[in-house]
Length: 294
Image 1 (cartoon, rainbow, N blue to C red):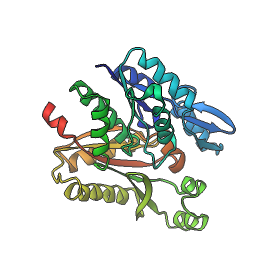
Image 2: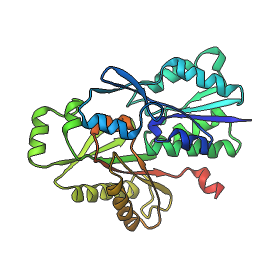
Image 3: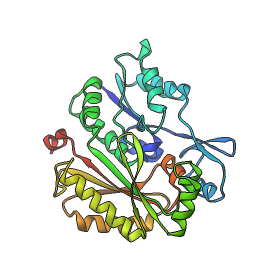
């Protein structure tokens, strides 16, 4: 059985990477000053951050039903089934849209939409996991079941460089943003499942990085049952902050010497809400099947 894996550009997978990996990536649309742009098709990361810095009016959107169906129809000419992994249902409506479309008679038993509440580098890991499970001989029903069963095995901690974009998106009040800017507060946020929530407050980026590494250690000690980080994937992500991310990656590798540490930019959908200059660290428990494969 041939199984195709589809995701969206919130996974951080570029169109070039998608070709190398053998997956399909739906580009996320953005409305910028009233015009529609598509991530990595008509909008580069550099262009996005420049427009963000220029205070353009930027809004996130979701792939149209037509664009989803066109991709599915094209793939089903070559593949028997499709595993579709959109960004977390708690952060976008794109998951519920895809699930509704997959419920149509012509896609029943052929398209399996996974809601495992992932985004960015954790969503990327889900794509790799889906490919691994397909290579092991699982069908669409089994892969969807395994990915959703392990939905909670992941966490992201993010620290932002500026409160401007959280204020702009209404996630904090103007008064809180003004006070936070005055006190030079670097909030640490958490994505655990379906929501982007406040986690802690730091006064410097150095302190924020320490808080995030301590928080990852606490997750490893508790929920993820992997204190020495031998059975989890770690990842570093950033918004237009590669140099600092590389430095943070080294610090994380020193703190967790047993871990493999992947690095990639955060998705533009997150960047839209938190702005440039952020850093993130994530932990995702390896699937049991990965141990069997190795």
